[in-house]
Length: 135
Image: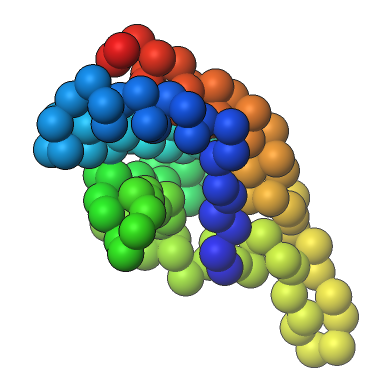
């Protein structure tokens, strides 16, 4: 599942940062802003996973990578990478599953999509705010 989203409207900030700082310093500013935005999404995911936790492992295994350059974009990845191997079960919780001809929709049905929708605006505001602060 690739539920990424593109931030628009911060092109002016990116241009101003590129003009004000060298390439590596500008890249560091963008990465720090993306990391802060990623933390917002992770916090929202953890909050939404709290509502249906059993052992709490699915919530505890939520991780975020550090921002990195991929082609011509900067990216972060958020997923489930922990000691409890919950990445195997998260997709069943998100989309439901069929067993013996019966469709099951667990308590966590749609939690990831809901989290992305809830955190989209605050992610963009956090990234833009961090970039503005650097200027």
